[in-house]
Length: 319
Image 1 (cartoon, rainbow, N blue to C red):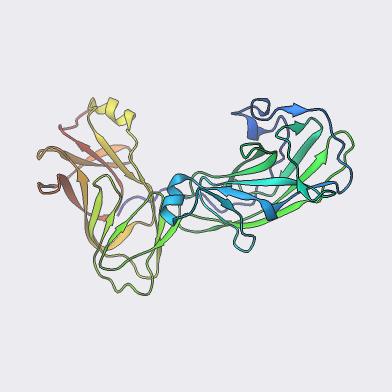
Image 2: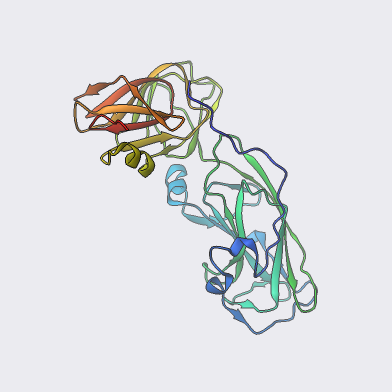
């Protein structure tokens, strides 16, 4: 069985106080993102954040996996968000009933964002990508497990000059990976990262998991009633390439901790040469793995109990 990777612990919610000099803007200064205009006094109850007219932008991957438009209106009855999502909350002019239409931020306006879990929310910021001023919540790019997180937080607009605050917006939502149901006796397409739910309709039949790019797991028997997190990272590992002086390698790092099988399955990786070598990376070291070449599919296959980190090389790799 592969070594367990460290899961991100369910910690206490981290309070994030956002201002012009906030840590949230360490990488992209606020001045580069949102221009400021002359002050506009924020009279009491004059403006408020409007979740009723908020929109969410999904990643292209999420849109494809769930057959959703890449940007859509938020449904308050189902506030569910996915890795890489951005939620845009516009500002309502309470007196006119219309959204604040300017793209730039009055120089005296600011906001506080409190209570958001850093596992779920990476930044809360001013935004104008939709053509008008809004508050954007950028959700974390990855959630490395199958469990769903509850997201609770409060955002409050305020006037820095007068100290007047708007009505606070309370966000109660869920954050989790895209989840698809296992299809028995079929090839199941895995779009990394995602959850695969093994429901009651599954009776222990062997299935095929396809990760794209000619990466497949064949004869996989999965634990019934479980939700399994799958995530394949194919980034080139320059540290290993330099250490072993082998630069024509392919890297297949399965990042989940739950991707184990009831009985051994066959992992097949693309390979252009019949004499390619497969190694498993264990504690940063390479361990040679016995393999067979599938000429029909140009794949090199190994037997696995669970998914780990593998290197395919056209040459023997020695330090």
